[in-house]
Image 1 (cartoon, rainbow, N blue to C red):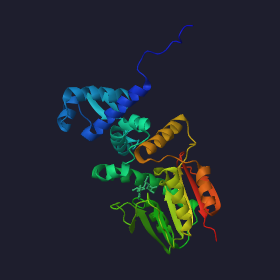
Image 2: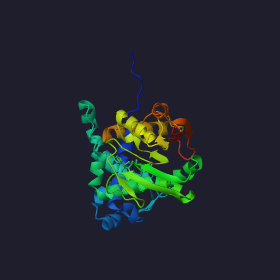
Image 3: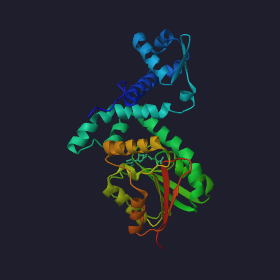
Image 4: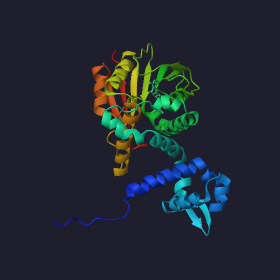
Length: 309
Ligand SMILES: C[S@@+](CC[C@H](N)C(=O)[O-])C[C@H]1O[C@@H](n2cnc3c(N)ncnc32)[C@H](O)[C@@H]1O
């Protein structure tokens, strides 16, 4: 039986990986900040090897990051308009540091799962991480605050990072106070309650508990425990999570699956289905569980619940 014809050219995966690493190197060298320029001028400005940089600039031109007129390189709209610089820096570090251990993690059943320890030893990447989270949170918060009827009282933003979501609720709810529960050293302007969420958490006397983009960082048993502990606080509990069933196209689905695998590899976590999250809330005794797919993100779902009377 004849073999089906196949394209002998380089796979798009391979080109994507090369282009990603080339763009990561260009960002770290400061190439995009030094534009416009010829290869020689950019090599001088960044201190990079001119021959290697020339080859890198050619690749980035063909893959859409740069345009070339005569010998002068400029950034394209794809780069300047995408806001990709910040995620690219963080993902470059994560893929470079963690994904090379994917085989070992899978083969031994022991993923590295030391993401936050690794991050805490790298101040520049830690700052980029919180910048990225805060940017996304700021964008989503405008929609989320409309979906949760907040009342005066005490709010705990568990795994709240810089506290962007908590601050958005504070800004529109007189009589509300908030704490962020997060790792020591988290750069947050709100009162920080230092805690390791890997350990059982006792939350007493809160009216509202946010678990936003946080349970996915933990194993199933710990994630379920965290949801139970939030309900046990006596407050209403709101979970915002990346959905396992994104509402976009195949690119969103692929990114979501890569993100889930990345959570497993870097944190021992994963994505949980909305049904599972709702089940944990109900079995812990929460009532009035509702689910809303965000319109600002095809990959985020908000689940809200009232603590049982
Ligand atoms: C993906 S970020 C989400 C931040 C914020 N809730 C948001 O939605 O933008 C996860 C947060 O959980 C915190 N976190 C992760 N593991 C933790 C742990 N073991 N103990 C305390 N906080 C932790 C991180 O420091 C980070 O701020």
